[in-house]
Image 1 (cartoon, helix red, strand yellow):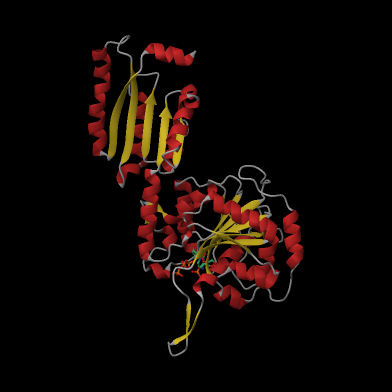
Image 2 (cartoon, helix red, strand yellow):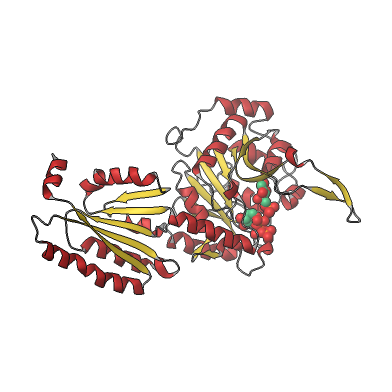
Length: 419
Ligand SMILES: Nc1ccn([C@@H]2O[C@H](COP(=O)(O)OP(=O)(O)OP(=O)(O)O)[C@@H](O)[C@H]2O)c(=O)n1
Ligand SMILES: O=C(CO)[C@H](O)[C@H](O)COP(=O)(O)O
């Protein structure tokens, strides 16, 4: 984590100072750049993201700025950071935070082990915060420690449900057109009231769209636009795409976004966000195998099967369990092929307990064991497995719901499978 000195939040110098790309030149140059691939194709340092997180959340009406409000005990901004850092081709994530919340933000980064984050000081308006974030990436700024990206994503810190596919769409479109942003259909009709609060005119709803985030820009396009824009723009503007059009003459490509891209603004949005997070949690499962070999063979088959039913399936032989727990996985299947004891399950239970994950929401653990009563006497095996009842009683006190599953699996089948 770095705290970069991006310059103050002062006004941009006025006048036309477009040094880089302009209008059609920018678009032409953009289209000649290499395209992005879902996995590969993104050159090192080609994409960075700027997250304005310096607001006070007045409309939320609570003392804590909304980006730090907890949802299932975890600050809202941590979900947004997680969504972005999951995308491996985003090389740097610049977060603009007010000076008084800098320590809080550093604490969140440390607690949730966020990666590739640099902090800059927020400005007094959203546009000024974004500008500060861009300055941290610009080559012409003193003490600039980050490399200038080809494309920069701008995304509000309070829109936690951004997925890789929409990020890829806006980045690809920005490469081609210079600028791009996610849009949604309007829910209500937009009307214009007159000074005496009577209807002046209304817009034809089907012709308009709501501008959402994420947005992406060729770095030079948006940085040049911010450098030229007026104090009025920086003070009252709400739309980065508009700045790219007005100052860099780039017509942004608009990309249809998902309904989950909405911005957490009012208190009720926190409840809506919580229910989406809970829904996602219920769709996440981690299968813990007891050996690396089983992770590769049995684990892979299980993953394929489970993926038809659930959105997020992770198979591991345990090395990255800490991280998986940190990412709020609440459902675990612990598969014990080699052993009939509970060592692995117990290790998992200890880690879950230490993480405090189950404080707000029950964690479900299924411990799977295999039984061959022809080679091991049934009574002996059952006795061992029945110990799970004792474990389950203890675990339940800590909101961990532990169940055991005993599968009849004779050794000859195991042998056949191995050969
Ligand atoms: N000076 C500011 C103001 C806003 N933002 C950020 O811009 C995003 C979108 O702005 P908005 O929803 O308006 O946030 P707030 O300004 O905090 O909300 P409100 O307008 O209700 O006060 C948020 O992530 C917010 O933290 C920012 O970085 N710097
Ligand atoms: O939705 C937008 C897309 O451009 C806005 O620009 C931005 O998210 C709105 O922020 P604010 O509520 O502070 O104006």
